[in-house]
Amino acid sequence: MGQDVRKLVYDGAPSENTYASDLKTQFWDMGYELFLDKSSLKTTFVEADIFDDKSGLQELAGKFDIVHAASFFHLFDWDGQVAAAKKIVELINPESNGLIIGRQAGRAEAGDFTAQVEQTKSRYWHNPASWTKLWEQVGAETGTQWKVEADFDDKADMLRKNGMADFIPKDTKFMRFVIRKT
Image 1 (spheres, helix red, strand yellow):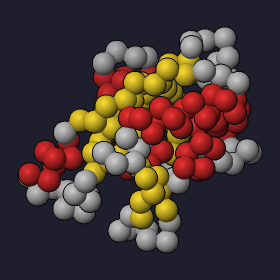
Image 2 (cartoon, one colour; image 1 turned 135 degrees about the vertical axis):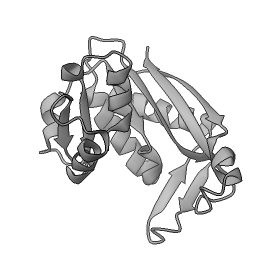
Image 3 (spheres, rainbow, N blue to C red; image 1 turned 45 degrees about the horizontal axis):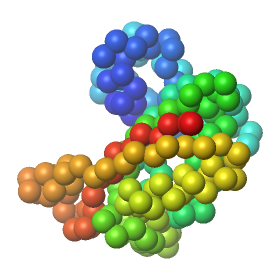
Image 4 (cartoon, rainbow, N blue to C red; image 1 turned 180 degrees about the vertical axis):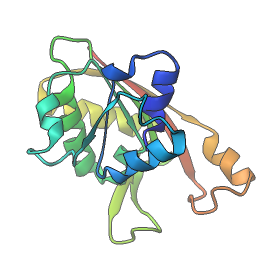
């Protein structure tokens, strides 16, 4: 729905300099309806599957200094995350000190996880140490180096206390991260 890019624009970023991507354009349409900003928001929305080499994202390869990836990586298993991370590395301007920021679901004990909503699909949920290890692998496979900072926040606990997140497994944490190209 684009709430993160809208927050960035609200905080002062020129919307014509922002891009956002998701699998379905319906998410942007819902965002326009919710935020009532179709005539004013100039963000370029790209409907794309990150794994599709013919998607609109490929036209943006090497064009970004900063990429924000929220509620994204935890949707995949380890190998899927490595593949997605490598695609994001391709989006970063090779001449810049690239920055990847975001958040995702994680666990104190990292490992494979099967979600209640999609029980046929395995996912890998990280802790800060395993997230760092993943980015070491990504760096080795792309010829780049990354400094990873990650920590857990308490939003999952806050949502549970208010009865708003009964579907979230009890040991879920929300992990924030900053990944800098070195």
